[in-house]
Image (cartoon, rainbow, N blue to C red; front, top):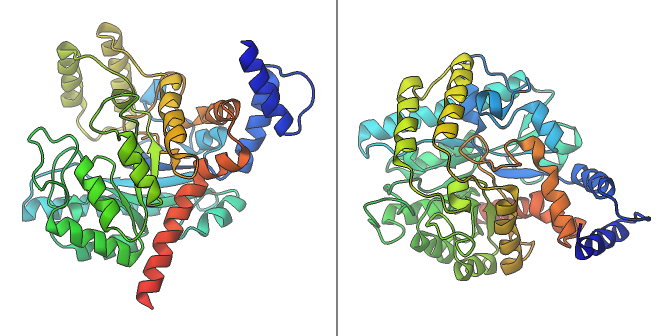
Length: 409
């Protein structure tokens, strides 16, 4: 440990009321105790996809190495993860009446699976719909289950459908995914922009989300969409799982100037942990072809046994065609840069667990306490961490609730 690191650790310990020399063990014990005091929320959990897997049980402890899952109840406890926003993810499909109907049915099925999981494990999980619910549920030692919609495609061309999902508990809506849709332009559609930001229907969706008290999520959206959301929305906007474009130049990430505009409007950037958005990953056509073959072999829906077999085949591909993988240091680079640019009132974490996220040294939610340790070593206080880990997103949800209540009156 360098002299500077020793001094930093000593300052952190002194601030926390711990005397004596800084040792390798002391900061982790102190930071773990602090971590447990906080409400720790992640704003983008793709774990509902696993709930459809026959033989996979959220109450059992799994491992990323064995089946590539990252979140279950035992690992949430180990990592001090109190919960977060569980995503109703729908990939972009055909923009037809048949496509909309199929997407809506899929999203409703995911919402039902979430409710079934919570009902089956009512002593461990509870649905949350208001900002105030988080503290109450965490106080009862249960895990918090907010719901979000990733990609507004299931709404078809009827923004009033958002009310159906609101009634099921959805409190955050992401307008778009990898491809443009009827609401907005994607940051990654190879065809380029279609609407130059929000479509007229997208602007209607902004107003409906505001009316209901649903947070607007601009992750996956183009820069123009984000800027227009900031200008149009009456409540703060969130990037539920994004990164810093200055640290890594990727269209899914956000540049410093727009980050500042987001913060000035009260919004948040939640840092993700997907390697391609963290670091430069060079093209590897042979690897891509092997992965396509793996997906074709096992399909989109697997049993737990097939998932274990698929994970073993994936390890073979990773060995045969290695590519750089982001590390915890890379993740922290994005997190600390965002904190430097807009401060702890406007930054949080949405690691994209079970949706492609995870970095070397942090493949599962059980590894989360090290982030608290690293933030403390960087000089952030318990009050800062309280905001970063959950307070900020609860503030934004409260603002959405307050505006909707005011409009209803």
